[in-house]
Length: 490
Image 1 (cartoon, rainbow, N blue to C red):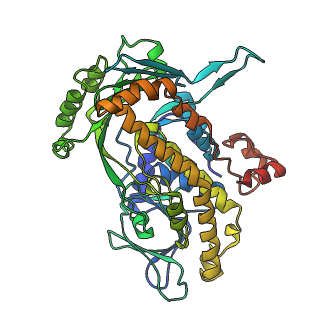
Image 2: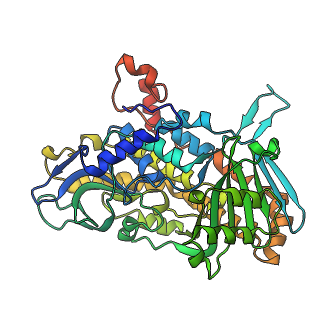
Image 3: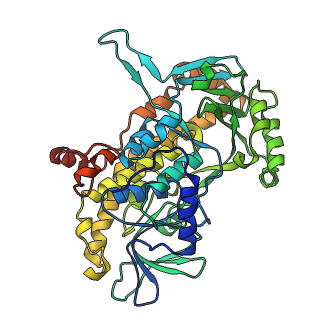
């Protein structure tokens, strides 16, 4: 069981945890030195971002310990924010951390869009009131969360020693021969060797684990995304403080999303340019490039860019990976006890706001697939024998179930995000026509709340009965045996 801190910020807590991890004074869970001199760990998660931390929590919820390897010397909390839609909040509920975050971030009321090329305007409400029936309200939960807050909240929900920093993976291979021929060998940049029974790659768009599995490298899209955080201007309209705003231009798009009543997250997407590689290395050059991209856009966009803290500014080249359904099925087979989660599996464009949400979904669905198997009774303790063919086959079947469960959801989100970005940026007169006179009148941005509310990753069972004195500290109410059984069904 884990208990989640209830304060919004507790940076010193995590600084101390990070120092203890980096200095090696904390014991690593489920690890031991093998007879060959390498460290033996049951479950290794490569990558300490949203996907990696969420996966570690999900496994912990079903009674499985893991070690997260993070290449940086601390959590990579610099950056802007994540838009977490209803499907992401369902996953955070399953992980037991949603109620720590909800009170600190405002529920968004809707999205307001405006095209500069045609003056077309569209509003979509996330909260609707029914006039008939019982007169009940329906809503799509959507909040914008600072990256630092989300990562620190996830990290604090893990047991001590679950994250090891300065641990960059450089190679991965299946061991040949020996007493446990089905284990996986991981070589780190500092010369450390780790032998793992299960490896889960959560190492992002440029995933070394995904490359080892045979997944093609993510493809660049000749688009960049610029992001930042700023304080809310005093003159900002009250209704806009609770609504997303998007402005569509000619080959460029800008958006403003409130995090709280005092803080805003903003973004810009546009076609990439040759000088972007140089611009991204210098903060002030990046700020000038951002201002240039939206020079014809109305305020307060320019004001927000000028007032944003330098450490929140970022620019990223957008990439994606598309797998046809038959390719997805092929990639799910023959990888043994190795799989990938989050951007390592499905790098996508940010045009649906579903990157972090999809990673959270992955984590919960993967743990659910493992929970219905007999994995906890396998030889996951080092003194219970070798990791043989039967154990490897069982885990591979679980991972295939995970890929099958995620297949159509992931493919639909990746495809719609790609098309939405292509259309809404309006890089050509034809695309602007499609955007202003076909996409907006007929779809009206309703694809955003639809994809958020149409999927539920499910819940996670508690692995063991808990003492009565801890009942009031559970992240969510415990279920009866019949409910718990139902929660296992995918």
